[in-house]
Image (cartoon, rainbow, N blue to C red; front, side, top):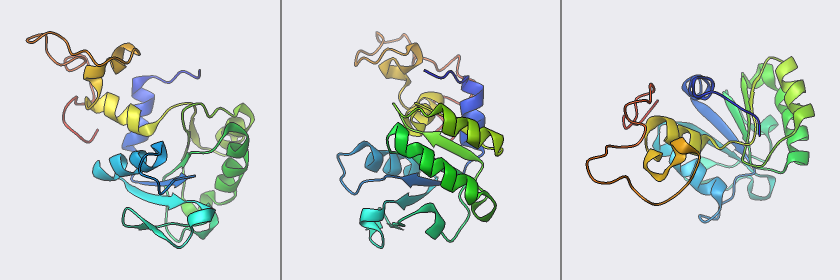
Length: 180
């Protein structure tokens, strides 16, 4: 698994305002749907991309069939496709870098494409692989720290009463303050 420091992830998330989610679903039980909803609630502008749903609306946003159709600036491309498909999406993001102003390519959990990542880095992009921006944002701002995310062990057991919120004192990014 690629390693990223808390500082790297926080700097990336703080530099982003608009995110294109490629492979988003209109099914509310799919991870891409609730990632979109969570990030919207945290103040990010989300532009959904899915050729099968193009022209429809999702959570108040028009769905586009590709990055090339997006008429505005996009800071980050979040890829909800498999590792092989990520290569083509990264190449599209590189071709459209000047038009879209994109500076981050983020590949979701289990999505790792080292060759595409190398091409993106060579083109000047920050790259994150095998991570979820929803999870990382929630972990760094304290939304999900109580579940063991800071320990990288997910559980549903809270600390004993009075033990404090896990990560609150050691999180330099404002645990519990919402937006990073």
